[in-house]
Amino acid sequence: MKIATKTSAFFAVTIIGFSAAVRWWNAAPPPLSANQVLALLPRGSSVHSLVHLEMDGRRPSEGAVVARIPSFPGSSDLAATALLYRYDRWRRRFSVVYRAPPPGAVPFSADAARLLAGRDAAVFSGLYDDGALGYRIVGLLRGRAAVLREQRLTGTVHLVDPAVIERRGDTVHGLRWNGGSWVPDGTARTIPEAPAGVTWRYAVRNGQVLARTNVVHLRRRQPLRVLAAGGGPATVVLPDSRLDVVEAGFRQREPGTYRIRIVTGFTPPEAAYVLTVIVDP
Image (cartoon, rainbow, N blue to C red; front, side, top):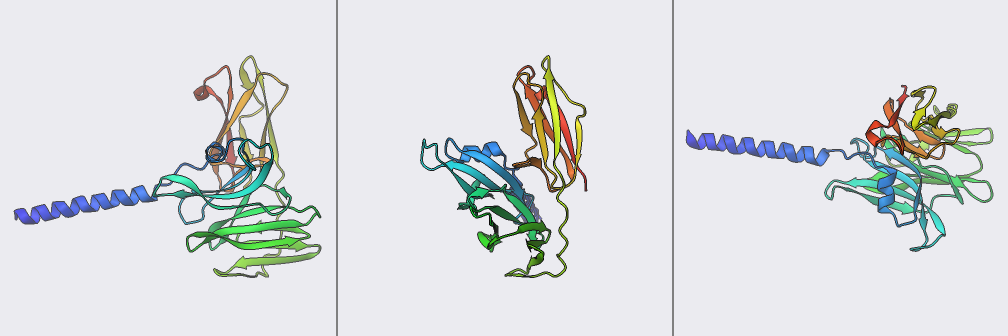
């Protein structure tokens, strides 16, 4: 009887330990922030854009980044670089799994779309000197980052989950990933109108942040600019780490409630003005 009791206790402890290990392994990290990216880059770098992705079926723990990085330490010559960060669950930190110059001479913001069987792919794009558009799709293939498509065209590219639509003049060409290659998608021919950006303005009077409203409603992928108006003391805008950072401001592809804090030199961060951003379905 005592042997059976000890055996049961051993298995119980083993199961509890295994469950704890699984939870530790699957624990999602906080979303990658622009400040984290800067801490991983050489001194003098700047973040042009940062988009959060879900590439491996877990909660979003990857980040597609376009950064400007000094050509060598101390250099004022900054080279645009496309980066893909992935969370290393063994080392418990983010590491670069893809790095290359972005397409074109003038990079656009990093982007992402659910193009790969319900999972995200990173999309880097830009303009060449002759006006042609270049774009590159990077995804995870057998656990490794890989370039799945790279094109240069005179036209536009639209991401309509789960398809990529290339438009050349009056010709619209839809593509869908079948697990191993891109195949024509005749159903993906409608290009949705991109939502116009929203600008939220605020002012600082007597140390207090003033605005017409502290709630903004957005559509998915709709960018939000946060601008100070009328001068006044310097402020710091602290976006929700789950928001994407793009050229046009802040953006989110998933419905939900997000917060942006406005910090002044007169108030502690915990007493900062809070702008609530609601991304509607």
